[in-house]
Amino acid sequence: MLQFELLQNDPSSHARRGTLTLNHGVVQTPIFMPVGTYGTVKGVMPRSLEEMGAQIILGNTFHLWMRPGLDIMESFGGLHDFEKWNKPILTDSGGFQVWSLGAMRKITEEGVHFASPVNGDKLFMSPEVSMQIQTTLNSDIVMQLDECTPYETKGHLTTQAEARKSMEMSRRWAQRSKDEFARLENPNALFGIVQGGMFENLRQESLDALVEMDFPGYAVGGVSVGEPKDLMLQIMAHTPHRLPAHKPRYLMGVGTPEDLVQGVADGVDMFDCVMPTRNARNGTIFTRFGDLKLRNARHKTDHQPIDTTCTCHACAGTSGVSWDQGGREGFSRAYLHHLDRCGEMLGPMLATIHNLHYYLNLMQEVRDALDAGTFAAFRAQFKADRARGV
Ligand SMILES: CNc1nc2cc(C(=O)NN)ccc2[nH]1
Ligand SMILES: [Zn+2]
Figure 1 (tube, rainbow, N blue to C red):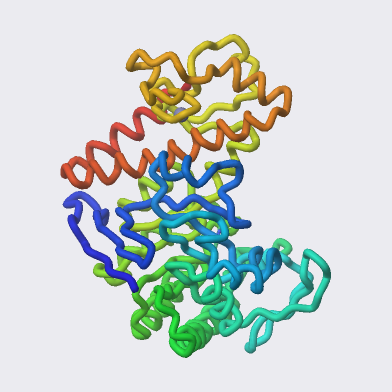
Figure 2 (cartoon, rainbow, N blue to C red; figure 1 turned 30 degrees about the horizontal axis):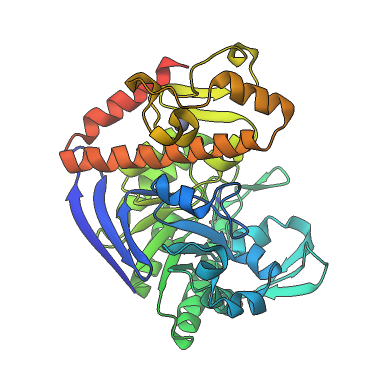
């Protein structure tokens, strides 16, 4: 089941405020979705995710199919009970992971043949298989199986003819995904995925065909695949706002804080990205006033937290009172620098809590600005703050 209610349109952009009601709960949009590849958002307890405001998280179909496998997922009735997350979950189709396997795969109209990266077994992924796996996972939002058209392959830029061929196969796989989803009587929501590479005419054809199939929600895929930033921004400016206004729009695999704010302005409701979690593990921290590298020697003696305006557990401790508000329970930059230098596991854990809180809080501030009708002013302040430097 899926209901999307449009609450407010921003007069200065394509931004909109909405609520998404799914089988495991209600999601306020625009929203950032933390990525939980193997059934865990790396290093973060489900309760902490809830405390920082996460409303929906991602699971990767491919990885969970490989390990622990469908029989174990079946025995738990799906992913929610297995990972003890009782709010909504979105699972991708597995296609993106199979494509990133590179040489170890063979693509046919029927589906993709490949060798398991876990044990070398010969495996086959088709729209029907992907729907069967996602039905077992019982995710609230299921993604069709498509081909994530590459931007370039071994230095060869994908031509419009090649992108068309790929997009047209994804369109046929969208219909097969829809038919199998219905045959399985899956009670959740299936999203179609717009492809078409970096070609606006192909994006329009893909969009029109998927809208014709009447999905409850739509994603824009095939970006953030190595293309120059200006091409990603061009597709983000072209496609999302052309999707049906009364249905949720999901931009896959994007992006930096700046990409999220621009994406909201371009009409996107949902984002997922590994940046906050992956960058945290390598000591790159997002803050209101710019990004910082924990390893930099300048942090060695600094008693301040990584972000003096932040109320997360890393910056403000259990009190939740930020440094700027007088709180002194947070961990210092000196301590996080030390943990990073020692390779201590608490380092990535605290950095992940902060980065996820930063992304989730940023989207909360975006929703608040849309509710107040001050999104244009918010964007200007956001840009000025981020340029200040930490
Ligand atoms: C990190 N970049 C990134 N691009 C993605 C594209 C897709 C896609 O087109 N799926 N059908 C999925 C996940 C992605 N993550
Ligand atoms: Zn923080």
